Image 1: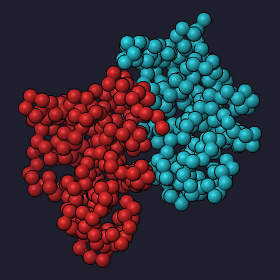
Image 2: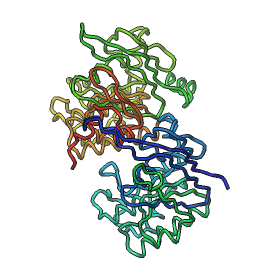
Image 3: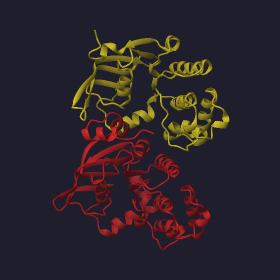
Image 4: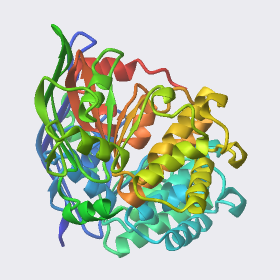
Length: 230
Length: 264
């Protein structure tokens, strides 16, 4: 099986220039691999660095040292332009927060990743509507901006947007948090379908049942955290 | 339109549209901007942030040829912008480039109707049919949320926010390839600002428009810019992917800037 995410000897520290130049080492010697069609869950107590590692894989946090290959691109070294291309075509990320231009209809928010890839608007909207209905967002909400939706609705819109394009690599940060049983099941089914088509998935799941259902392996990040590793 | 079509064919998407090398402008002994270098690719939006007096607007003016820098090079599609004849630069700024001024009065013709302000840009790229110019102008006024029945009024009868929207319509109507914007959404209601952000994102996505946006609104750059440059004292202190610079700033000044934003 091909590894889509390959991490070795990854390290990072935060330097807080305006707080006495404090240096906070947050990661050292991180290593893991995720193959195509596999879902790997990150575990470890709160503050151990699960989200930090995920953000580094997405290129949202800079890496101090080590290698971080995503579908052949070393995110630790890549130019911004290459990371933008990687995010457009290959690397999807469902964060816990929906960040959108206000006043844009929900259906267009979900279709946007497809429009950016040049898909015809009619086709992109059809795909968006399909996902919105699977995730039980009522039709009457589709023409409205999601900025006024409830937390759970926003989270489902975010998931629909993240799954609109069939990304070969997906990062999922607590995709089932604050969802009811029915919607949680829909999201887990979407994850299983993504795995079946060969997507490599790295996720954070606090929900143990969800973890047991979709994760093939777990990686405890405590071993990568300076000061926490026993 | 012939000129535009030709340059699109000559330029692959993998080649920079604009290349800036060691650009420096001094005002006497004071630094306007110093040693600025970057590439801008087709379909890319760069945000420039920094406090007042950090050199953002000076840099933008130098790039667009409104100010003559003391040092450095600006290359657009392989052509040296600073060395090109004034007539050539003016032709570019009427056709392939657009410049949205902070003060709409600097970018509008105040004695000409709203429709005329938009139509003038169209005529500069060869449009001649009055009916279709008027239709396009009406369409663009609608896109920036100016009612069609205001088309024959002069900008002097408009509010400041409407003038700014008219200036944006006048600049975008010809589908320019490169747009310079100096605090474009500064004086606008947040609702109109959101509409314009969506309009700009659509143009970037569908037409491959490139833009350089000077602003001090970090929320605007997060939604609009692919890359971010942070300026202080005329120099670029940090640059990178927009979300990376905002979420994991490395420079002391950027850390201060990001941590100073009030949460809403």
